[in-house]
Image 1 (cartoon, rainbow, N blue to C red):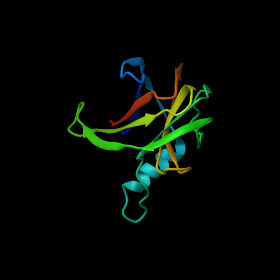
Image 2: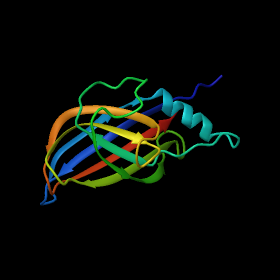
Image 3: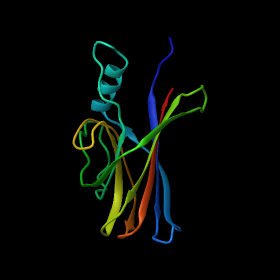
Image 4: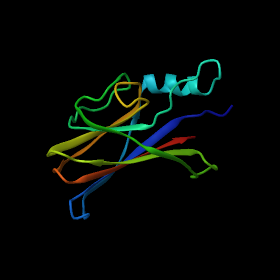
Length: 148
């Protein structure tokens, strides 16, 4: 019997107003229980669900817990652009990317994936080393989730 699992990583980059990268990090995530429930429903016509197309960033460094249902201190959320990537099997990785224009100085430390532009179910969350993004900066963020 073959087991299936989800695992993912966030790619976070902060670019200054001049377009020069000030920060870059790739961090593993925690898949949330609520996210697993939605994913299983998406595989069934009778159940369905809403796809995870929104990326949020926040300012809290509290470690993720599989029972989390929201970010601890969300400050921005954008819809993303999705694609499929090949790692070990054709199209086994879903990729979601977005760019967020920063309008006031914030110290970013968390990221999450949601299936709504506000509230909604959270698929995954991660924390990373604190980085300050200033007004005029851009945060490029991507999320890869591999089905293995």
